[in-house]
Amino acid sequence: MDRIPVEGALDQTGADGCVYNGMPARDLGTEGWHKPWSGGNGGNCVEAMKLADGRVAVRQSADPDGPALIYTTSEIHAFIQGAKSGQADFLLS
Image 1 (tube, rainbow, N blue to C red):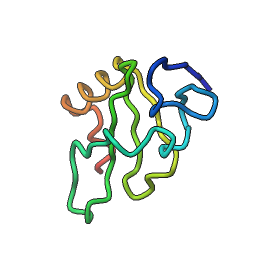
Image 2 (image 1 turned 90 degrees about the vertical axis):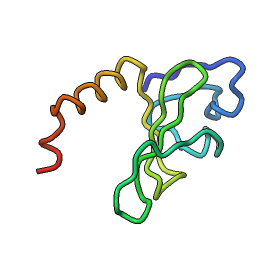
Image 3 (image 1 turned 120 degrees about the horizontal axis):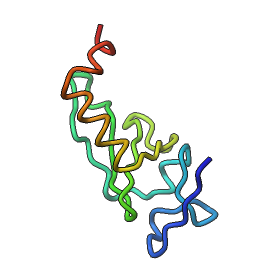
Image 4 (image 1 turned 120 degrees about the vertical axis):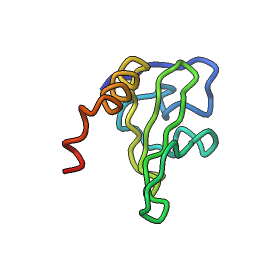
């Protein structure tokens, strides 16, 4: 696991003072989570939060205490651009 300390982000650190992939989303706090999109599934969807160091945390809204996946800005950019260009359409079929 890549544990990266984030100075001055007390609300956005794990028990060891680092943000890492798979950490409990609750350790990132309750403020700042957004549902950038939502389907017709009763509001259960993906939530995202921009972290102080520029990375993006993603969690399942139905399980806000579950794991947070942490992505770099480059990874999020590549995903969004790929989804826009149809590269993720296979997920829908």
